[in-house]
Length: 267
Ligand SMILES: Nc1ncnc2c1ncn2[C@@H]1O[C@H](COP(=O)(O)OP(=O)(O)O)[C@@H](O)[C@H]1O
Ligand SMILES: [Mg+2]
Image (cartoon, rainbow, N blue to C red):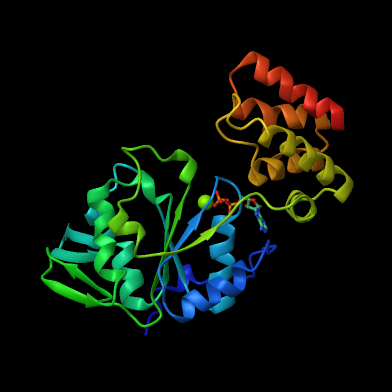
């Protein structure tokens, strides 16, 4: 039989540095097939974590980047017209449910609420997915699990998950790792020495303290990896930090200067 999930199998181990007991907790949640919500700021390791866990559990991973134009049909599937007539094509959620993958809905709050509700019957005891257009009730494969990620910082009244959605999930809090762990991650991912990584993390910690005082979001681990990568390619550290850490997060000249001077403190 053709392996329809071949391209979704995670064959090489995605590097993941655990921060607390999230690996064990997720394993227990998966064993119970509990739907999981990964909460935390952007760029702190949520996506990498789920990739790592899919690899560790030996399950295929179907990732959907949610956006506000996404419709229920984009998740469920639709009839397509081809030379032989119409044929049904499963959407990513349906495929994952049928074949037993972990379905990761990234940045779920970006999707409209009328789209999000299609996951409800899959996330309670029923574990079914009604395809009304096709007149089929898909029973989820025993290995299937739904995982969603969500950044609580972005939530507004218009853009939040309904309580009826939230209460279907177990949740794990993610945040930027502690100094030593983040240093190790940045050195590994950016291909720089721990000395450089340590300074980058110190710059980020300064900026994170300014969150809510003129900055909406701190410098993420992802941004530190970018800066490290540039430094690893022989870009001067000051230029690398300005380009990868400071300019992307602020348009305000005073804030920019404050962050630039934090960079010169450490480099
Ligand atoms: N705990 C971690 N272990 C390994 N890499 C990490 C970790 N946290 C963050 N990273 C690095 O930061 C980058 C961004 O993380 P990502 O998982 O994409 O963030 P999120 O999904 O939370 O926005 C990753 O590509 C990886 O290089
Ligand atoms: Mg992500």
